[in-house]
Structure formats: structure tokens, C-alpha cells
Image (cartoon, rainbow over all chains, first blue to last red; front, side, top):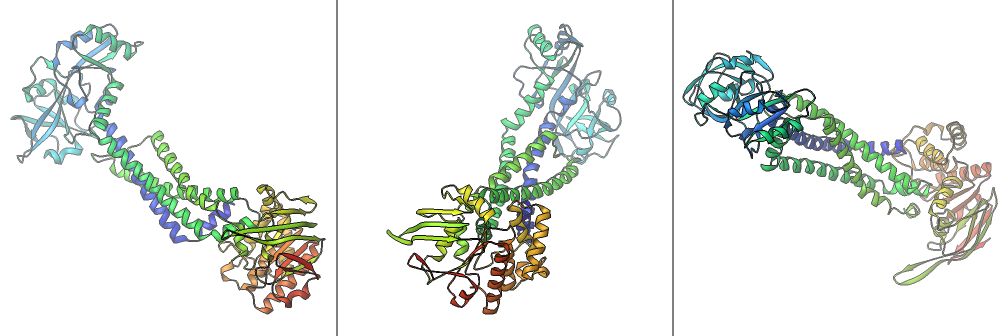
Amino acid sequence: MIGIAIKMLLDNKTRLVITILAIAVLFFLSAAQVGLLVGWCSTTSAIIRHTDADIWVMARQTPAFDYGTSIPENRIYQVRSVPGVAWAEGMFMAWNTWQCPDGRRVNVELVGLDDDCVGGPWSLRAGRVEMVHLPDTVIVDELFLSALGVRGVGDEVEMYGRRAMIGGISQEVRTFTASPFIFTSMKTARKYDKRYGDDEVTYVLARCVPGQSPEQVRDAILENVPQVGCLTSSQFAVLTMKYWMLETGVGITVVVTAVLGFLVSAVVISQTLYAITQDHLENHAALLALGFGRLQLSFMVLVQSVLLGTLGTGLGSAIYFYAARMSSRTPIPMETTPEVFSGIVLTSFLFCLLASFLALRTLFRVDPGQVFRV
Amino acid sequence: MLRCRDITKGFNEGGRRQEVLRGVTLDCQPGDKCVLFGPSGSGKTTLLSILGCILSPCSGALEIDGQPIRHRSKSQMVAVRRRNIGFVFQHAHLLPFLSMEENVRAVARNAGMSRGDIAHRMDEVFDRLGIGDLRRKSPRKASGGERQRVAIARALIHRPSIVLADEPTAALDWQNGQTAVRLLCESVEQDGAVLIAVTHDTRLLEFFDRRFQIDQGIVLEQ
């Protein structure tokens, strides 16, 4: 039956090729949307995930990493004194204005690092992260050099009327907000942002002593340090992702587009299978008369559906991985994980099987007796 | 081999009941070559559909190879069609996207024949019908006569005990039609099967040893 099903599909090669291309494009559309979503989720929480800390202490009601507000610097010492904390450091994070050499102004997210540079860029093309401790020195990402109007190390710009010099170039430190991250020291950051006092920080980052769970230490910090919010790193990453994906509606838009891609794909397959079944009604009737059962013919339609799905999804996957590779060095990367991609492929196959419903319905109405009437 | 008793069949048409078969009784033995002839609308095709387990009668009993047919059991009817019956239709009804031999092989495999048996039987039937050179040909590129001969091969490949032929010559010219019927009768005789052919062409009656006339739903043997 599988052989007959394949040959029936191959009977109209033009239709087959067009259908496979349509499924591939629609699969790519859906996979790309999910890939963007995964990429965005990853981007929104990149600094949190790459920071070697177990705990983030912040102002209460902080909705996301990008919207932290000031807390007193002495919280660092208070956190250090909590049982179970191995070390703690401060971090500064605030929106600022970058003035390009050509006079343009660009909104940036200014990140000030403490002595150990925890939370700094995790991959550098030029310079070292410790360079942020040099006076008026910042690190920018290579993806945003042109947006920031600079070419490389040594270029000078202005931050809020103060000199800033490029001391290093990071790699793949993307931003979801379209405002590039600028890394510097906490001391320099406070100079650039007068809204913060010299005794204020945005976050306190802490690591637990071995054997202590982040959840236990988090609870201990909440008990011992007044007027702060405290989350484990994974909680803070999820909170930030949820904020951008759900609160802003971006996630829903992307998910809706992905689902639409699957639905249109199902309609295309459904239309094709229905057309193939209609074209071969007489042949199906002959097969029924010759002793083939309806279940065998249904199996044939399902085989055709799975074949279309496999070929379309295979081609779509190849296009997706090529596009994902191309996008990996851009501010908007398409990313995926084995689990997510398997989910997309399974969903696609599920829709393919659902698409065969119309054809199966037609098949169950075929009268084998019609071979005597033609 | 094939026994039917008091088969009746009627249809509702436009609110009126129309009786097509009115108590048909037939007994056919292996090797019988039967022809069923009569005017259009006399019930020939309906009877053939019932004997072929495609239609169910309203009443009466049908027995194929000693096995009573329960017409309410769709799976039994499919199984009987698959193993015990060979069909030759008015038009060959070959699957156009398969080659000639693939068309025949599909029926053989569906009947549960082994690969070795299929290969041996295909050689035998194709040789007997003189269509060995058509094996790889597409039905689309074959003539009507060639297609009908392959359809005969398809009907015989799984050694059915009953071969039903519905107007097997209707789509062919006289020469090709005669050849097809002669080959069909010879093959059925060699296989020891029952052949029941339906025709309205009285010139073909000489090929058959039992002739049944059907008129207004009643069958009479001549």
C-alpha cells in the first residue's frame, strides 16, 4: 500500500513539488517565529544567565532586569552577612544617552560593574573586561558599533556630557530593547548618571556557599535584609522573559503567527490530499471492488500525508537552519533547542495528520459499485 | 462453488419501490462459463454486484466456495472479494500511475500470495494471455485491448474461484473484444474457476457453455 500511495503522489509531480514548497515555506515561517521567540527569550535574560551569581537582590516590584531602580549600597554588606552567602557584589543598571561623534543621540542601557566585574560581557573580541575600571572607559558590542557611531577601541564619545572611551569590544551581547548595553565600572556609571547617588546600586548579586540551595539563601536574605526583593537567578531570568514576552504582547504576536503558519500549512496539505483523493476516486472505487479495505485506503492517505509532511518539514528545516545560521551574527537571532524544535516538528506532523481528515471523509463515501457504472 | 437462492433486490426511486431482482436462483460449478444477457435495466449489473459481494441483497442466500455470505459483515465481504473473486470491468480500471505488472501484483499481494508464488503465477498468466511484453508499460500508453487483457490477468492472478466480468468487450472493437473473451474463457477453464460474464452482445454467447437470460429481474437458463 505504501508503494501505491507514493506512486499516486508522484502521479502529478508539479502539484507535489508546489505542495512540498508551500509546506516548507509555511514550516519555515512557523519555525522562524518560534526561533525568534526563543532568541528573544534568550536575549532578554542573557546578562542574568551569563552572570556567575545564584541570587539577585533588587528593589521591590522590579518588573525586569532592564527596569531596576536604586537601592542603598549598604545592602551589599547586609547581604554578605546573611548566613549561606559566599560573596556579594553590586551592579549598576540604568538607561542613559550616548552621544555619537556625529552628534546623534542613542538610548543605551548602562551597566556598571563592581570590583570583580560580575555581570560583565562574557565574550570579548577586543580588550579585557577589567578595562572597565580604567577611567571613563566603556565596552560596547560589535553588533552595535555602527549604531553607536564608533569603529573600535580607542574611539571617544560623550555620555551625558562626559567623555567615554571605547576600551573593549564584546561579542553577541544583544539587547531586546534595541538600546545597546554599555559596560563600564560602577564608579564611572554613577558619574554618567546623576540620578544615582554615590551610595546607590541597582542590584546586589550573591553566590551561595557550597551545599546551600539558592532558594534557602533567597529566603534568608528576604528575612534579614530590609525592603528588598530577592530572586534566584533562574527566577529573575523567567521574570524578565515573562515581562517582555507577555506584558508587552510580543510573545503572543509571535505565537499567533507561528500557529497561523501551522494552520495554513494544514489547509494546504488538506487541499492537496483532498484534490488527490478526488482525482483518484475512480481508482479508489476500483481498489475497493478488487478487495482492498477502506482502512487500507485510509492508510494510503495517511502515508501520503506523512510523506508530504516529512518532505515539506525536511526542506523547511533545512531553510530554517540556514537562516538561523545567517541570523546568528545579527541583533535578532533565530535560536532553538532540541526540545523546542522537536515540538515544532511534532506539531507540524500533527497538523499534517489532521489535514487528511477531509480526504478520509471523501474516501469513506466512495462506492465500489461505481466501477460497474463507468 | 457458487450458489444463490431466491435473491431479491429493490431500490427506492422517487418515493417508489422498484424491484430489480425477483428471486434469482443460480448454481455454478468449477469450470462453468456462464453468460448473463438481457436488455438494459434488466438487473444484470445488480446481480453481478451481489454475486461479487459489493451489494447486499434484500433477501435470499448466497454461498461462495461453500461459505455462506453474511451480507451485513462488511469485513467478510471484503475478504471474499480479496481472495475468492476476480473482476473484469467494462473499462479496465487499471491504476494509471502503476505499470501493468504493478497493477496485477498489487491484487496478488493483497490476496496474501507469497513473493515466489506471485512471480511464478505472473509469468504463467502473462504468457497465457500473451502480454509478457506489456509488463513495464504504463496503462496510459496502452491500447484498450492491451489494457483489457491486463485487467483479465489481474482478475486471474490470485486464482479466484469466481471470475465476474461486466461487459468486458463494451469498450473494445469486435476483433479485440472477441480475443479478450476467448482468452478469458480459456484461462478460467484452465484454472477451474466459475466465469460469469454480463453482456448485451449476443454474438459473444457462443463462447459460453451456460447462458442465462435476465428480464425484469427474473433469470432463466436457456
